[in-house]
View 1 (tube, rainbow, N blue to C red):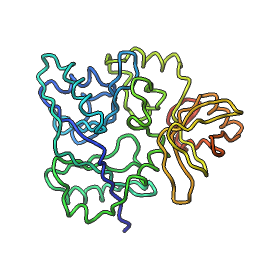
View 2 (view 1 turned 180 degrees about the horizontal axis):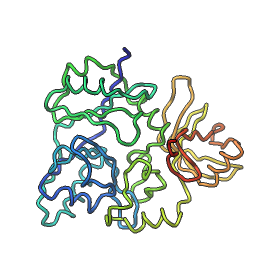
View 3 (view 1 turned 90 degrees about the vertical axis):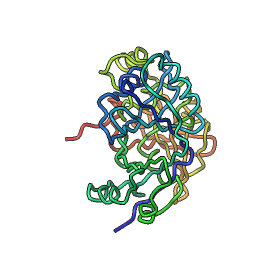
View 4 (view 1 turned 180 degrees about the vertical axis):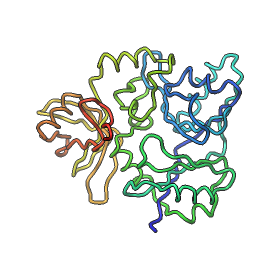
Length: 310
């Protein structure tokens, strides 16, 4: 049987937040519905400014009823911790950085889904300190293994190590944005980044920081840009300008080189440029070459959401 790959998330750190009021505390400030998140499940969420702009995106793992681990880019960890402390007030919770954080992606290169049988096999190989979570944003992104200690050697021996580029290709293909490189702090809106499609925001749970602006952009259709995948035979790099008929319509975000020599990237593009490409199939242009929008098959441009499964 083909072994899946694993890639270490060396650029990540984590906060443990615990206490009897932790669920309501996080639910009142973050975008996702976390009170209902089952133990052993993970969820993407964001902390917004009062103006509805993304300050931090994060992955949240529910460890116990009264305990969550929050994974975030290393460069953002202290700012997030300080912001959480500001909102803590007299809540009965504790917030601390996890000092010896270990985290990895486990995935198949072609995005093949894991069987329940294989997941159970991995669980059997885990130490008590190793925890496994299915990626709730997109099943092709595979699994996350997280721990406060070094991973079990038995587990690692059953997997093939690779750098993050293979996983990044799957992420970008499925238009999943992450971190500062895709989500400009205090600028990007939730719906510009498609984060409603990945359950990172809940429109039914009530108030949270930035909720009013986020709801307004959804119900009034105020979004003018979207983050979408693009492809090119030439280099795509951060901040490269994208043109349509010599008019600037967007710019590149995160990118990855593929084995066939082509490049895949996320880009923030004006909606009219995206719709024009889909209708006419006319290529856009970068500073170097033609650029093509590569929307995943599951995405419905008309509704701006995932297609309904029949």
